[in-house]
Amino acid sequence: MDCVRFNYLYRDGANFKRWGEVLFSNPKEISLKNIEARLLRAFLPDGQFIAGQIGIPEVFLFRASKMTAYDHCFHEFDSVEFCQETPTDAYNRSIDMFLADVEKTALKGWIAFDIAVLL
Image (tube, rainbow, N blue to C red):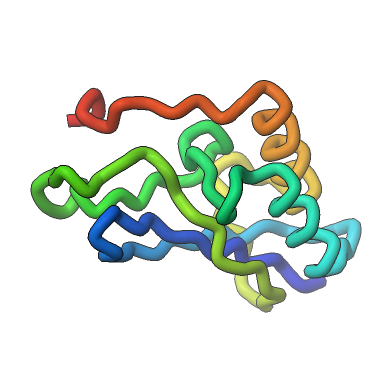
């Protein structure tokens, strides 16, 4: 059974980027097209989302350096792909469970926050 790699990034206002990925099991063998369509329907325009609200690691640039005026709380969806690696999700979710969490969060509403509270 293939796993699904969820690729995402943090892109600050100056276009500096830091990448992240989470691997999910896919026991229901959901197609990449279906996964991507569900994600894009749930995310904000341009594929933006709040990583902490869906249980994936935040990859902010300012965690490794100093916060700047260009920093914000949003992460950005990049892609999904099949892989043969071991799942890495901290909550041991399948891709179907992750999609359900994303859709549930989208229904409640993505809650933006001031990133200065993280410092």
